[in-house]
Image (cartoon, rainbow, N blue to C red):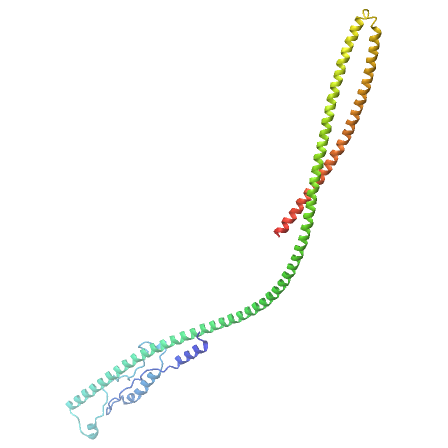
Length: 356
């Protein structure tokens, strides 16, 4: 990148560039003997040298602004010319032919001199115009160099600001790296502590799992025992109920049989009453038989009543036992449900621990 100092040095070198301009030189005009514009001839080199050394300004760029290099001609009459022959012979009077010849030769020399000066003046104007264009180009180059130098200075300042900003950013990043290193060390210690706690938790989880499995096995065993007891109670209750039903059926059959026999006995009594007159001699025997049958019937009724009472007592006892068994079964079922809920909770905790 080009620095501002190098650009400033190049600009100053451009300002110090030598001007490859050749100063116009005027040839020495011929010396006329007695011209009135001899004084202007002696002043001409000075004016031309001043024109060559003067730098034109933009305001005098036109051709009309150029200074006149020749003096104004005397329009009042012909120029007075000193002739050497006239000087040597002041008393002689010139003839008309010689006077006209001398005047024409002097005018021709003056015209040649004026044309030469005019051509030199045009040449100087052209060179001055070229020098002016060259100076304008140099001025433009100098202005461009100055603009480039200013831009380079601004860019240098911007880059310096960026360098300072980057330095501060690097310092902040270094501090951030140090903070991150400290955080990393803290996180490493925290991770080691977390791993230690995780190992302890896994150990406790293993112990808890063993205890839970043992409790689960005991719960399964209790459940199986409770199911076995429940099935046994149900089977016993069913057997007792079936036996009671069978005994009640048998008792109903016996009662029906007794009723049928009693009806038959009533029919026989009726028949006996009808044939009492005919079977008077057998009355006592029949009376004894009837009494005997009555005693037997009473005995049978007593026995039957005893059996009925015993059956009723047994049924009441069974009815009292069955609700107790049902309550025991309900309590056992409630314990089983609680055990199942505990098992579900333990399994859920186990699954959650496994996912973690």
